[in-house]
Image (tube, rainbow, N blue to C red; front, side, top):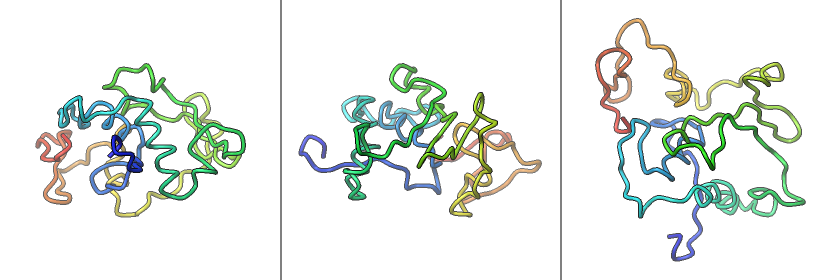
Length: 171
């Protein structure tokens, strides 16, 4: 699609099996690997880091008809920003999915703060949608503690932390 000039945007829309974490998606686009490290795509179907980031920013802004307001660091566009835990352009591919924002500012307001910036953190909003697995299992970078007893989730899904292995397709 990219070679044909067809507009492409990147994002997270599969929240029943993935988190909202953009770094998980960017890691996937760059490495072709699942969170468990399984290679699903050959190098010819992967993107360079700058191309993947461009799809996430400018590409997605095009799809929401907001390319004149966001998606690039240029005068006149929104100046939302984040300070990252690691450098996306130099961290090893396997670590892209572990990147976290330690400070996120939107509309001039701090909406997330951690580590050195933790004292600036606002209260967390509720997980949305409420049925998202993130509410029970945590996200890719911050897994929730294992429950006291084995659980069966959607499709009989079990987590390795419970000693039962994992039949998740992203393992």
